Length: 192
Image 1: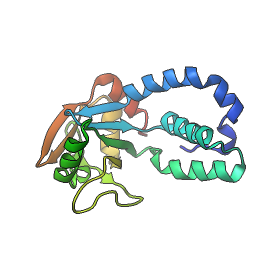
Image 2: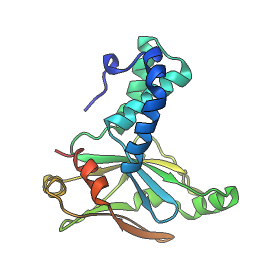
Image 3: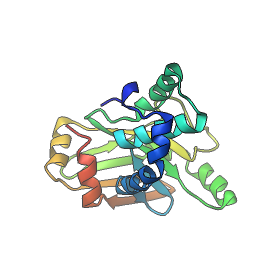
Image 4: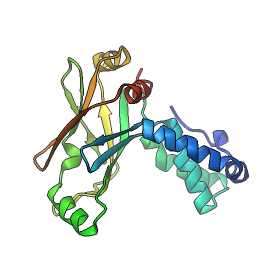
C-alpha cells in the first residue's frame, strides 16, 4: 500500500471537496478508533486516513511543488499498514493540564504495554515510536505511533472473524476491551 504523488488532489480540487471529505473522514476515523478506558484512544491508520493527513498538511502549508509534496508523502508513509500489521496513533487524552502532566509522568512506558490479543493466539505487543523516542524517564508523550505485527496464523484468524481484544497491562493503566465487530471488519481489511 502506498500513496503516489499523482493520486493526490491539487490544492484547488481538494479545497472544493474538503468540507464533504471532512464529514466522511470523521465517520471513517470513528469506525477505526478504539477507546481503551477513559484516557487512551487508538486511531488505526489506513490509506484513507494517511491520504487525508497528507492533503491537510499540503493545504495548511500551501505546498504545491513536487519536492514538497514528496516530503509530505515520505513523512506519512510509515503510518501505512503493509498487510502484516496494524498501525495506530495512540492519543493519551486528559483535558485538565495539571492532570495531564501528572498522568503523563505516571504512564511512562505505557506505549510499550499495549497489546492485541487475537482469539486463540498469543498477545502481540505494540512496537512504539520506531522513528524516534517520544518519551523520557520523567514523562511519556501524549502522542505515540504504534505497530502491531501479526503472524500468518493471526492474520488468517482475524480475516476469518476471530474475536480480538485490545489491552494495556501498564501498572497504572490496566485495561482491555473487545474490538467492536464493525471496527474489526474494517481493520481486517488491512491484513492479507
